[in-house]
Length: 337
Image (tube, rainbow, N blue to C red; front, side, top):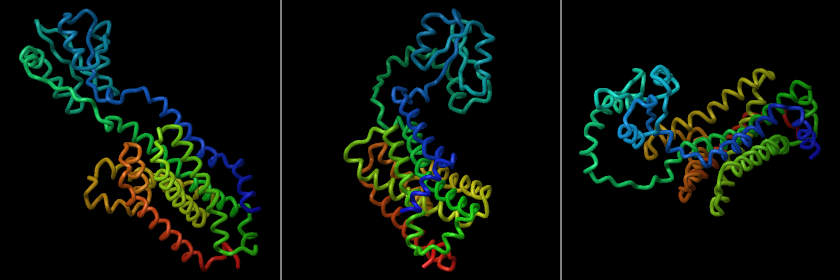
């Protein structure tokens, strides 16, 4: 317990560990502020018009088909259209009808809309004769926010990796690792002591982040907690690997950043690009954070009924990587009998 106490004292000196703990919570609070934002507007077509240029009928029709920004003159409209940060379509009057202004570098979708816009306006009367049924958007329409929440939570899980790696590297540089070699401590005790604080830190950071940016239902508590515990354990164990194989502080920081990218980025790409029932999705489980990412996405989107397979994958990773750590460290004297 004294070793754990000294590691707790080291947290105050390690700014990287403090940032790893607090940053996801702060980002989670920021995401929570987006609760009143309609993410469906992210896909709404943006039109720009010049003040007093279109007739009232034209302006009303454009407003019915997207968001409209009014500019004082043609120069302001043209500058907005060619701005690379926007996908705005300019709309001006042209001999009793409308004409679109495009920058030429739009996405194909907006280019097609701009090209067809005058024709759609001409045929607006015929379009009114077509029956249109408006259906309410499903909860999946909020998937960008769900994605941000899960990315933030997976980042919080990585806190244990950062703490364990920096703790072991710090002991190497301060010479404490030599003292550990002569202490009457078994290998199992050493691993428990080293992994416990990183595990607890990752769990607390992720739980705080979850409460900051998620609306958690009662039935979600246990599966969410189980996902967090298993994922944080794997993260803390990875930190021990980094600390063991790092030759110094700079090398450790490089390893942490590389592993963090591998921990977060591939699951996002797998989730967005690989079908759920494909062999590629199954192979993605070779990366432990993939199961955590998929499970959190299902929970956030209210599809947490069948996530037992994610628990199984994470548990297998925990056992395999722990056994591999004991096997590879059996010849070294990080712990003494």
